[in-house]
Image (cartoon, rainbow, N blue to C red):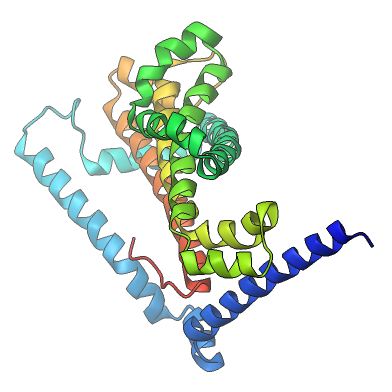
Length: 304
């Protein structure tokens, strides 16, 4: 075996030992005993109720406030329908194949756009964090792109791609990728210096240092960036579906535009509620992923 191979293997082994020692310490500090761990995982009726009642209370308060506004006659019922009328429209949606096809098309666009943004944002984040030149050149630009409203990109996207799927995907990627890149950059910047020095003393460098030390340490902040990136992607997608209407391809955005044009307020609000619920479901999934990552590293679960 050549000396370069021996050195590479030694570097990788040293980095692995650092990562394993840190994970073992975090697990020992954060993990409860066997009995309490089983108890925490068990979904008892009391635990289900404790997790559910705040959300149910929020929904009840919103519905009560909505009903009070409706009863007050502030707006005519063809502009602001009652909660009961919107609820009936939601139930009617469940039996319409076109409604489920619209959800499927919207979710497919979201997954494709966010997947591309994930790859681009991750590669960009690693490159910018590893190079002072790239950080100086693109650091502020990433923040500017992140704060730029996604709706402002659509005239340019339509000019480039026309009224096609590519125009929507282009804006979704531009909306999500900067947040993902910034999340990864922040996570890499927050890696503890003693950990880096220890890994380098043990021989870790280059790709080995990133693969086994830096990226695992940056994972909690990176996942937080993914959550924020998804929020930007979802907002960009809804704006795109309102502006880029493709024939014979139903979507939630197209339904919103259609019901607005025909002044069908109950169906319009019902579709808005579906968009809100889907966004909340995916936000909850990313929050759960963030909680798992943080707990596994002994950081404790987030409150949001």
